[in-house]
Structure formats: structure tokens, C-alpha cells
Amino acid sequence: MRRSTSALVTKVWLYAVLVVFALPVLSMVVLSLNESRYGTLPFRFSLHWYQVLRTDTALLDALSTSITLATEVTIVCVVVGTLLTFGLRKAPIAITLPVNGLLLALLSVPLLLLSAGLLSVFDWLGLGQSTTALLLSSIITSLPFVVLIERGRLENLSPDYAEAARSLGAGPVRTFLLVTVPLMAPSIIAGGMLAFVICFNNFAIQLFLAPVGISTLPVQIYSMVRLGVTPDVNALGTLVVAGTVLIIVVLNWLTGNAARLFTTTRER
Image (cartoon, rainbow, N blue to C red; front, side):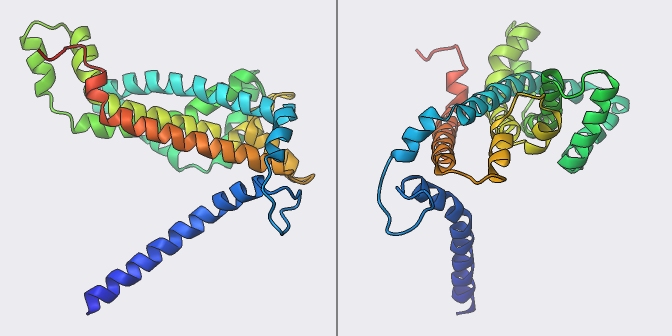
């Protein structure tokens, strides 16, 4: 009896948490489909705010800037993070210890403090608020997550696969590309996805280091909040959520089939 009651309470609590998490998203979707500018009742279904969004060049330009920045950061973080993960595996403790400490510090320091510190460093270097400073800062804050995910996969990866490939005559490069990379592909994809999301939503870094005249989506929405958010922002948020769900579904499929997709050998 106690176990069934405990299980029921756990389920109710879980569903309550899920509802609290889902309510903001659901309300945003509903408001984007309501004809009223202020979300008042009665609800009247309309795609008017999606049509308004098509003409809102400020939001669309900010969205394009955020996607471009996040894509560039993701590519750099995946390449550098993968190489760093493999390098730390064979590096001496005199190198791994300070590097691990730096990565943990980047994960634990509040973003507002880190953003202010990076701005001071880039001012001292003569970069200040610039595109280069924004790109480098976004890479710095996203890279530790990629390394953390890939390291967990690499530590559980048996070295027998690489040794078997080398015993069959494969060189180091071929072993890495045809054996290690397919086995590491799920963590590489997951790390890249996480880097993209973190960079896309990194409001503090973008607010401190974005150059004048360039606005990312979080900064643009923040500037609109002070004057009043129009429902076309809800329409854009709905499209972003739909795109995110689609990306997650595709990446889940890719992750489950990574070994088959990245392997060049064919069954006979």
C-alpha cells in the first residue's frame, strides 16, 4: 500500500513538473495563433502574426545572425573539442590537470561575471565589442560542454577496436577516421547540438560583446521587451520551438544510426 501511494505521488509530481515546463511554450503557441494583439478572449484562430513576422526585418535579421553565429561556433567547437578530447587522453598530468581546471572554471563561473571579464580582456587586446570578440567568447563558453560529452564517451570506448584495425594494417589516420570517429559519432553529434543551443541562447555573452549595429535574437527580444513585445515574437518563438523539436528528432535518429552512417564498409 505504501509503495503504491509513493508511486502515485511520484507520478503526480512528475506530471505537475512537466505541465509547469510546458505551459510557457503552450501559451506562446496559443497567443501566436490568436487574432487579438493582447491575447484577450474570445480566442479567434488566425495566422495574422505569422504574416506580420514576414515583414519584421529586425527580428528576421536577428534570427539570421544568431543562426549564423551558432553554426560557426558549433563547427569550431566540434573540431577543436574532438581534437582536445583525444589530446587530453594521452597528455601527461602536468597538462591535463590545468586544462581540466580551466574547463571546469568556465562551466561554473556565472555568465555575467565571465562576460564582463571577457570584455575586459578583449578591450585590453584592442578588440572590444567586435564580431571577432563575440565569436571567440561564444566558442570559449560552448567548448567545455563538447569536451565533457565527448570525454565521457571516449573513456568508455574500448581500445580493442583501434588495436584490431592497426593489426589488420590500417594506419593511425585511417583507424581514426574509419573506426574511432564512427564509434564517437553519437557524442560528437550530441556535443555539436549542445554547443549550437548554448551559443544560440547565450544572452549574456551577446549583450556584452556584440558590436554596435549587430543584434542577435536574444538581444533583440530583450530590447523589444522594454517597449512591449508584439505577438509576432510569439510566432517566431513557435517556429523556433518547432524547428528545435524537428532537429532533436533527426539527431536522435542520426545518433542511433551513427555507426552505420559513418562506416564505409558494406555487408555482403
